[in-house]
Length: 250
Length: 248
Image 1 (cartoon, each protein chain N blue to C red):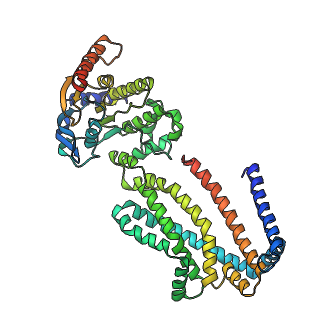
Image 2: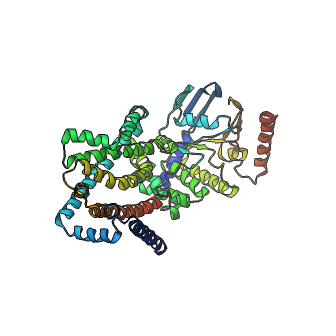
Image 3: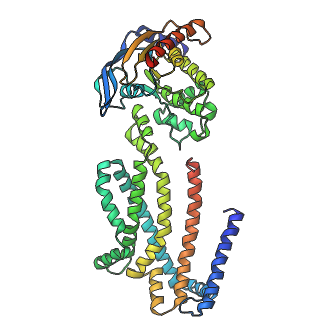
């Protein structure tokens, strides 16, 4: 990030803190909106606790599993669907239906099947994010420049080489933008799923804090997630921009 | 190597009368619109023909049928060669690959790649991506890709349409040079009489849609030199025919 952009970024964060402080002062209820200083103190003290760090690691591991599964299966299924018009036309409505199902419905179904535990939040998160990856990949394949495919046909280039060099190359921009969307959402989805059907993790800690009316803890745990989310998103965006520039597409 | 080239060329010249492509009564329609009607011709080994016709008359459709890119047509194509190079109207280069990787996509023999890059003055641009090249350079890579497979038949689909005169002349010279070396057969699709004269031994004049051959002109004896009066004379004669047929 350039110095000028960093300055703007930090100013933005400062604006949030000032607004938060003013609103907290106006509302003057620690139960609704605790002041930022109190949340910061809670955040620091919570991060010193081993159970909080353990919960954070568990949430991060779930996020890792969700990301790996979503990207791997999303790309594979999307690739297969995108290559075949008939399969795409048949499966697209199914994927759109899965995408439209509210997360709460998945949570209910998952709780019926697996109860409360590690698997539930992972399955729910995958089901929420997989359709987007599949469709992005499939669209990438379908929008591949047909003139390049024709060129390959004239020169009798083997199908495997065409897939590697033209199709895979064509889906890179779509795939990276899908990855940006997934990274931006995976934190929220996993934490919500943990809140509803998890046994450990930051979402579960938020649920306990809510039960014990520890509002400052709810804000502190949320801040942890936001911080990690923003850091990862910024790093990813940086690499995506760099990669796409090399890819001659931005 | 030079001796081998000579022997090879001699063999090809000896087989010049061998027909490598037989186009029999080709017709093609898009729905109710008939674009090609009953076109037939033969192409011998080492021979070059030009399909000269007005824009939009179906020349590209015909060359696409010959290249095997269009399957649903009436008539028959008998092609006795395997290696077909195609210089497209637009370069069709893979944007995220360098020049050298674009060439490797169709031919992995590095020695041949470097030889072609050198012959077409592209060596210094080997690691450039297409977006960093000028239009003329991209078209040169398009030609290099077609030549690198050592084609027996080279198809050119108005590849100079978007180029300025200098680039056009330069690339045409390259094609003429490479043809002398490699002795491939060639079909040039164009609406430009000068291009047709420079690149071919025989010109088939096509009518407007539905396209059919209206005249066959042997130009094998015309000097391939635009400063030669004989060249201008033949060019004028063909232009007069065009004015009479396409416009008049």
